[in-house]
Image 1 (cartoon, rainbow, N blue to C red):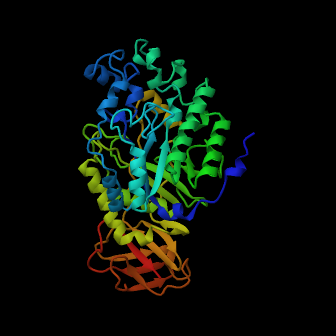
Image 2 (tube, rainbow, N blue to C red):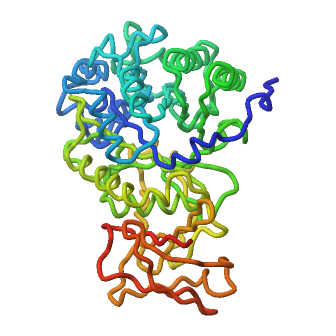
Image 3 (cartoon, one colour):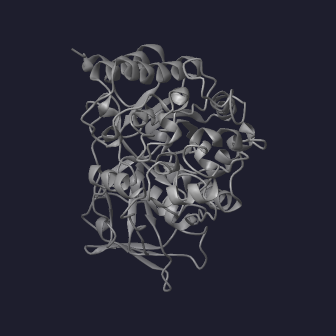
Length: 470
């Protein structure tokens, strides 16, 4: 029986201080750049949009399979130092490429899996190069694993598809019953698959010593003995922490990640949400990409941090290894905001309450029902809308004796009122109020109804502004 108590521990301070991370979906699915990163699966599902696109563009599934995209992932302009420099400009504190998605293409120099980025595509050790470049800039290194999804991933409704040719088993794994491509299949992974799953994680941990090992959903299908084996290996052979989704690992064995989600209130435990920079319903580059703007990204980061969480943001590079200019602009704008206001984000802890205002937000998560809907339709059927915030919305953080009140608008009359900090409220003493980016003391008064603050004529930065309450 697995002794999960032996792999539990406190979340390290560095992770709680970091607040903002990034990862990068980059693989052969980036070559067609059609609709989303599930192309490798959906191209084999007769009648789905990606299947119709594939057969029209590339030919039949017998003659043009997913393996034929490997060479298109050229990476000729990939530069790990440029990726690392972008992370610095964006204010990111931990980052890494997707180690392996569901498609059996390993983005590291692997002896376990011959289908990797050194033997195919870029012919470079992407993980190794990123690990070195990021660490040179004091960015913690992240490895993410999605390969439990490989069980049944390529099984096709077209009996002539190349995935059923025994000669292609190296690329797609062995042929399995079609029902194994469900989220919760009746036929669970066998010992050979479980061994492969564990060996890949252990190889990356041994070779690159990541600081965070992230597991995507569906890890529960892996036999508990192998999940524990991997957790125990990480615990004994590295300083890495685990993040996991749903209930795939026991509480305490890692940090809970809620995909594209939020909590409505502060949680007593550190947590993480992973979300997309992409405005479309995709985690990889697509043919005409659009990206979220900095205002929404900054508001999301502030909301997550106020509730004891971290934001892990995704951006998908192009096949040549560069990022779209619009993605770069959004990230650099977030970084510019953090250079002024990072004091209210990095190294903080939640205040007594997360904030106040009309945009509290309900609990949300990319849960099992949404996963099953995506399996059926090929894309997210009900993508969440971005939360909007205004000048009456506040998010609070704390560091030492200072409390930070982040607001998301600039009222025309330059008057701000915070109910929670009125006389007799949550702040027993208040010596001074300033704006980050403008150290001049602000006029304020406290009554039973709230703390009233007079803002200066000009904002110190774009997007959200931060009041420092000393």
